[in-house]
Amino acid sequence: MSNDGLLDGARLPGSDARIMGDSTPSSLFDATALTCLRGRRLVFEDLVFGLDAGDALMLVGPNGSGKSSLLRVLAGLIEPLAGAVRWGGSDVAQDREAHRARLAFVGHLDAVKAAFTVRETLAAHAALAGSTDPVDNAMAALGLRGLSDVRGAELSAGQKRRVALARLVVDRRPLWLLDEPATGLDAESLSRLQRLIDTHRATGGIVVASTHGGLEMAGAKTLDIADFQAETQGVSA
Amino acid sequence: MSAFFAILMRDVKLALRQSTDLGMILGFFVIAAALFPFGVGPNPDMLARLATGIVWVLALLSVMLSLDRLFASDYEDGSLEQLALAPVPLPLIVLAKALAHWLTACLPLIAVAPLIALMMNLPADAYGVLIAGLALGTPSLSLIGAVGAALSLGARKAGLLIAVLVLPLYIPVLIFGVTAVEAHLTQISIAPHFLYLGAILAACVPLAPWAAAAAIRHSVS
Image (cartoon, rainbow over all chains, first blue to last red; front, side, top):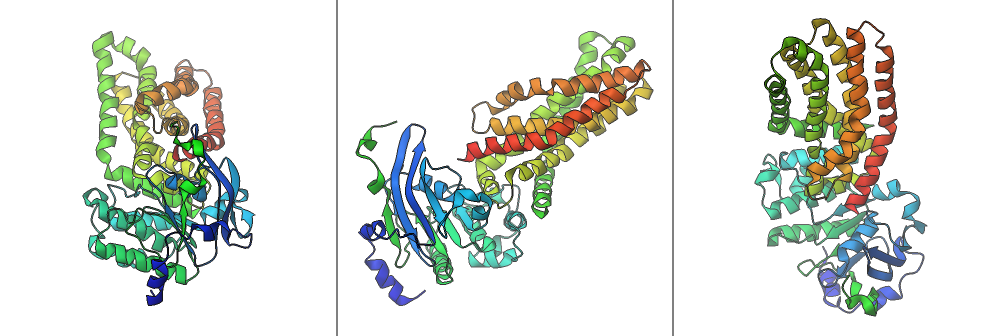
């Protein structure tokens, strides 16, 4: 979006400490002492962050460190063992439906139906989400216009990912939870995604995204899951 | 409520796109029925005696075979995750999917059932009761099946697991579906049997979607 944003992005690494001290209760979207148990493995504990309107949080960490688990906890798909995810100061577990109405989640599965065309996949999602926004806007935003009548079975991995990302435009939700959104995207699609994220943040949206590089979010906070893992974590489950 | 119809339309449309699945299930229904005259002999009286039971048992098995497409494909491609994240109660989504399953899997079976009854020499005046029993009993099969299908998500050999979970629960529907026809043929009241089928359905409508939704939440966590 803005040129100075790139400068902000340049001093991203190592800004973890900022988050640690920043979890003031006044944040719009925050996590307090969040602990997640998967099977017998403690994925992370006492994880905290706080985000305000327009903020972005970049989740980093090696494979299997719990980035996806954290995103799923934030989406409400996984119940945390302890701690709370809060929106506007109130625990989202108190009203799951309201939380689901404010978030859009792109996981590592693209949810593209093989038998549906791109348009039908998005239209079915829009109908379920109660969105009246024409799906053409969403297809245009991700460069999917030319593919609107192509069936999901015939799409490449990167094209399916673009359909998954087009749901973000259909949904118009304030909170975006993106699990490795840049996977499989070509350079042009990646810049489209970055423009979407910039616009979303400029209009007060919040983005939490995990990444292995590729995606740049200007002025984003960085959270390394390894900072919230106990020393005993090395022992395999 | 619009979300309910959105899911219903989506699933019916998907099922019609993949109508070969439906064709195969109907094929199974008819071919399996055609085996009985070979197995028990072509004696018309014997077949007439077995007709109702055969139609019902094969209907149960055919419905069961169609259950794996209820949630499994949505689970594999991530759609189920998105459904679980929709700002709509998940049991309502399950109910819509079960209704779509009934429309696309059970209704065709009901339409084909008279053909099998004819092959089995069922007395002509029992057709109405057989069809009415299937119409009232099969929605329960879809709903109970939804619970089995949801519980088996992510399991190896999910199809077998569904069979083991669901077939025992189908027994009450089978009993009252068959006894309704028997009652009609022996000139006694069919009302109690239909009341039981209705009662099973009345219990399944609120309980099954709720149970299936819990299983789905577990599977996508």
